Length: 315
Image (cartoon, rainbow, N blue to C red):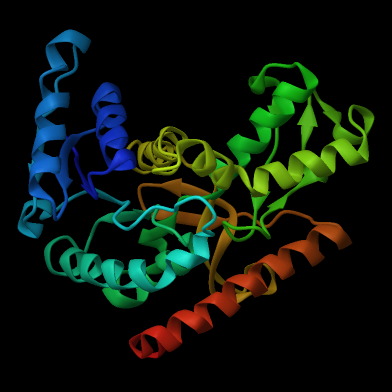
């Protein structure tokens, strides 16, 4: 019996997710979008590539929430993307309304699924989805840290002229301008960064990582990143479906870990078939702790704004 993976939002990320999931044969795909034609068209297009690429997956496009019933995994990308000059936070009001509708659809039709949120502003949207849906916190996570870490790793690879596979790094905190590349936990061919790169150049790469999404938005003009976010979401889904017990940086619910409570933020988590099975607490130095606290504080402040927009989030 193949797993069932439902994708809420059939835009650029949703369509790319559907294609990657099909190629990996992780499960049958339901592509949902309020614009039914887009969902059906992309499902049909990918379906017609199955004989070429040799994968055996069923795809369905729909605008009916009943079609996501009993999904194993749900990945949410529904919402409006950024335009040049916009921050992720600028999307808050519009995407809160959208995620509230999505949460109702998921709660009614697939309350036992593992839910991955990709919609921005990520940390607030995943927190709002969990509140609106009432799903357990270990089954609701946000995709951000994998993407941010991948961007940092790519920039380091370009600068140092080494393969990305030879770089170990992790980016924690909120998915925004205060995200925290953990420099003391970054190794290139087993060597620490301070032996390989000047502080000024490293500061530039950290800032480029924080602005990584905006850089792509600027180039695209009409849209935002979708290949790397989709690949990151698929890695999380695969860890859950295959019970890989894989440690990945994700936006997860903190209940005392890192001395934080009742907030979602990017931290290393172990993902298996129970969802978030453990939050890994890294040993942080003084600066790393300070920067992580600043990042999580920014998440909390934005969540207060969200609560003013929709008082239901206070319940």
